Image 1 (cartoon, helix red, strand yellow):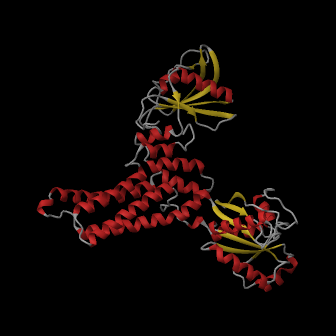
Image 2 (cartoon, rainbow, N blue to C red):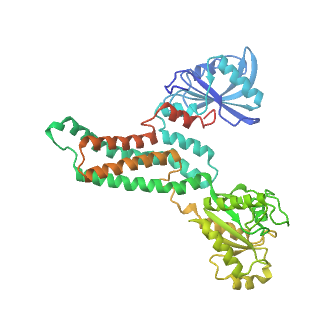
Image 3 (cartoon, rainbow, N blue to C red):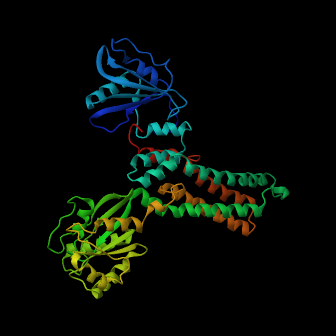
Length: 466
């Protein structure tokens, strides 16, 4: 696929994950998909079974065989162009999930004229045939990779064209004015203006406001897509590794009574109420002469800077209120805009009232016993409330793709130049140039402006068979 021109050949690939299972699905797409399948599809008595005359979107039982050697009993579903995913003829063969059977069927299909599909080639054909725009195609990959309710909702909204439609409206409005500006260039000697500069400035300001909102949404969108980073920090032996293991319900981190056991960060993911969190257990923060441990402490501070939520865990038997304040002051120098959640660990629940009295002035403090797994549900609920992405209206457009943000930033920069040009009464040809840059940047998002390198970068990340 070095040259991204739509091919007329027929491709085939496994559409389900590699490996053995109850069933597997092999997909073909192209003008000969049905004909190639017909050449290896038979009735139980090994008579050829016609498919070309069958209605679209129908399933047919039969045998896949080669030279009267039966490979498997299968269910063949046909989809006739143009109302298919790729816009081409599509056949899906559901067979038994043996790896041997999968490979045998694929080899027979290749022998009869199909070729192996490359990564993302089915979705690439959908894009080239106008069934999806580029941002929708990327949303297909996001949908496959979605691992929480929120990331699924956002990917689905993008795939259904929510983001594309917004970009299309912005581009269309800008294009109308661009046409008038370009027209002025044809009459430059007559010094006429077809585009009302006041209306153009209003439009540019409106578009800039929308673009700014879209760019700002990436902070949330990136978290929705990749998970909310939560750093678990505190002094050595505060119970950080125990807490991580309890949250994950797995012995992910080594637990020891020896302070400084954790020397490096340990990371894992957990979905709570449809929201994905990435928990990072860090080395205990203290002054140390151990070179390796100090590296771990430095890494802990790096993780703090990059995390959305900081759980500061302390041993209620070790720290007084005054000591806790000193520790929190050190942490606050590193957290930036992150949210801080202070959690007292190793508590004796019979003395909970005394602890609440001693630490009651600490905002939103929680008390748990990680070892006894008490207070964990309240901690999870608090985490969701601290960064509750469910409050994000997923019917709004949320940008989750760094490529889209880059294009939006380029469009924003070009439109700011247009605004500056309007304020200084710049000539029409310079205005037209900056508007073209903005249109090009917006067009890159949906694929109206594209190149082979861009397509190669996007579709090479897809799995084969999608």
